[in-house]
Image 1 (tube, rainbow, N blue to C red):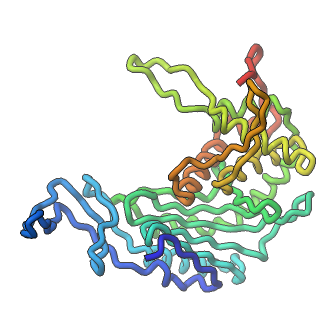
Image 2: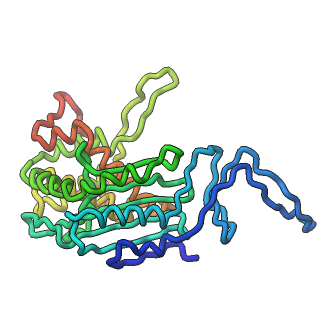
Image 3: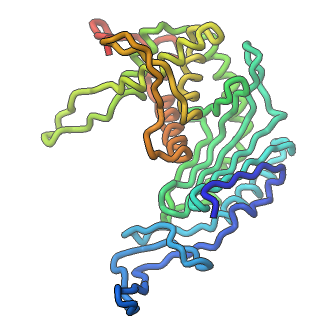
Length: 337
């Protein structure tokens, strides 16, 4: 079976790529062969597995019995039905369906070419919405509205309390029908985000402000608490910070020293997982090309995590203050990261 398969079409109700039977088994019994070829039956105590009954392939396992089974095709079909009921959404839609890791993870992207916002740099931003799901206990069910900027091929993710973003674990409390009621907010969100993008373009920022807000948020390493509950020293992910500043500087001629430029640096990182950038060695002055991808990492999983981090950043007080032009660097702060 192919690891990744992608299909692009225009029929929302076509969920054939996601069709696969799945079942859950608690304390399953399995057959083992010993070195002499003798088969023995054993019980996997305190184990819950998700498997395909047609191939008997185990897709995931856990010690919790709360995992809720939802066949991917049924989930995506319910979402499609809800979208088609919304008379405000254009009928012209480009659907991109993708399965990863032999079907263990799924994604559907719906782009609306007729819902477009033209930016001052003449780039076009199209409305889109995405759904993520998995059957191997790795991804939560997620659905959100965003946009796509054609000039840089960035998938634009937005934060804020008004953002349509559903994220739920596959537990007994998962109610897909209830979460789908938010689908009808898609156009409203896009229109609000058009105003937000225009606001980003007009709001200027300094390089010091950009470096400081990144270092304090998305480029900050998780320090956690010591064994005594005392906050440990805050450290900066220097590589990630340098990458954002590199992208911001590279686009200054086109996008200016603006929040819009910073926003595009963030979404460039969350979209282009295999990206590289040029970095100067502080000791030797030598310029080297640095990769932003960890060895052995899966691109689709990395993208989901990065998009979540961008959304979290945009929900911070710091980001809202920068967007409103009131973000201030505290006095006496050392900006040498």
